[in-house]
Figure (cartoon, rainbow, N blue to C red):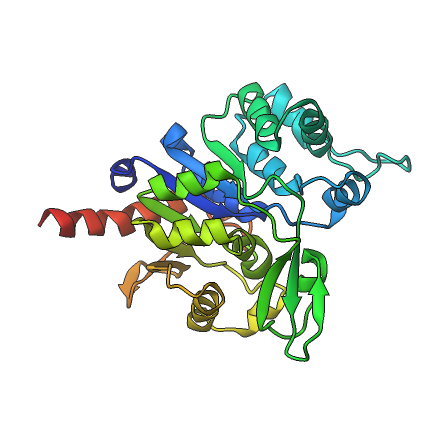
Length: 303
């Protein structure tokens, strides 16, 4: 399939973090500069968490992951950006890409400038924008009234939180808001619902841009139950919870994995699983399924 449905769009925006957003961006990279990724920057684990604790910087890990998945392979640049230090030194466990982004950030005026320098270095046409250029953490409020601080601990919660917030409350990157307002298609997920998809939506200016946007919004569901409290929720409850937290309805359609293709109640089912890993979406299948979903819309508009 030539993805004719997606080629009708002038500006497609994908929002999220982790490996899921990188997978979507890689699958749709044929859109080139018409594609923008808005990347979650609240991670506080692993190499990223160590850098945040020492340098009070934004979380670079998800941005680095998206850049890695978009980079042309094989290349020295992509291999260098993916390199992770081993051994028992202070560098052990750190990813070279994270260190490069942090170093460039200190040399540049803005974190977005650092991302754009790496994009140019790796010959990436797709735009990548951090949700905010200021450090912040995800906070979950439990039914007991107690708060859970940081992405890592939120994912370890037993019960679904009653609310989410950011601490401190930071400003959204203005380019991210502009991209949402210009978009004619917005994709959320796949990825951890609470810690990858929700954080950008908690920024008031991004939530306002989504409320003002005329774009169709598609949620791409995960292939397997994620190890987080949201796993206890059904798909409909998850969407309702998102809308309740935001105070607005944004999700128009949902894409889910199934053995055969069929559609039911604004949910498109399609064989999406990669033959190489049960938890990864097949990139070709993901692009084909999204193309089918939006092609139906264009056919109806032209009828």
